[in-house]
Length: 564
Image (cartoon, rainbow, N blue to C red; front, top):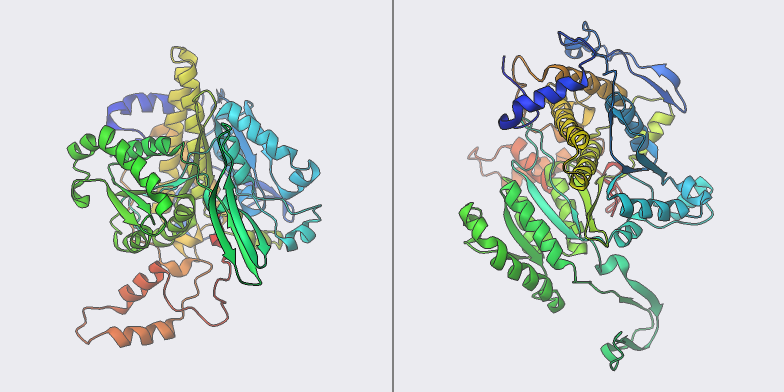
């Protein structure tokens, strides 16, 4: 039997012992199956969701459940920020059926950032969550809604509340937002190898001040704190009757911290680093590149050279103009690189990474900040929104199939960071060391169980097609596999290797194949070297395939809404 452990070979035995510790009271001797998952829904009420009925899902139906351990592991403090709609519903199921059977989460601090809770507390719940995050240092956040004008009326809110992300980035001294591709071993996605991205977490257009003005003179004046003489940063004469004046700045004090985080992560992931700016036009961006370059050459270049990670960049840290970076993200589908950029460029470029790799559900979004005492604060969330279309289907009593991959990666990251902080605080405490080992074993095993469920063709419909699992069935299947892996940590045979799932499975697939076929015929020279299927796949992945009539340019696609 091929051993399928969740940790490295070097610690396989210790990992297996930790896994058995979760089930030491259960006397399990064979793989078992979890019973049907009971859930509560506002519309469906308390129900037991039956199996799908497809014969391809029957490999575990005749087996019994692996009972949870009698003694749960007490987790260290963590901030849990709840959102709303479909992702909140799925997150509740995940915590109830994947986390709580094994762990005591009573030390977690919960904050409800739904629109209703923010309105009822006049947004005090947000300030409380930010304070708790700064104090504890490990945060998991579900997707939340930043209400539009129409949603203010729909939800009966007193006002339009702004995005909570700005308050969090300021309150936690945000340094960077790490957005990396998520990979499932054995499943082909957009990039073959990891792509890392660091997006400067502060400054730029997101914090801009602005106003509509007419003809006149616009002065931007700097008044130093040290009492020295003020001076004019910019003066311009406005000759149009209608103008929009915008003022923003980029704080650069923490760029050095960003550099260290970025280069260390690139070394750990074995990828080549690149720095992205538009400094040829925006001269004020030169300082970002200069700081990154200075730190790299002084402290990291030798390590990257030894690792052979600079061969593709000519032996140096390479700078990319943002326009060029856009093209390289399409061309470098082998992956194996990392990029760091300003706030706005990072937001736009990571959208493109998500498109190439499959969707925002397949990249992470982790805010890294720093407490006043130097402790690292990390907040983990999915890169997508609340998936409103599936929530409306759920409320209407229809089946849904939500892929929770991005949310689960965020929850795993927050749990790991919480355990790491506890171990850093009490490095010699035996109970803390035991807790840390069990959390690391558990999260590695959860990731393996989740990924293998996709590989066995038991995934959600965005990955498996119309015959895929419903939201509830998928959570139930992973719960079964997780219990089995924790009990035995082995497989009779490795799961199969799959090609990238067909993009037509996605709910918002709107490619006009008639127009695309005409475009193909225009460029196909009769040699047979260019196949229509590969041509269509390439243009769809690049996001430039013609769309069906009725989809207006720029129309929001509900499953691609992300938290900026």
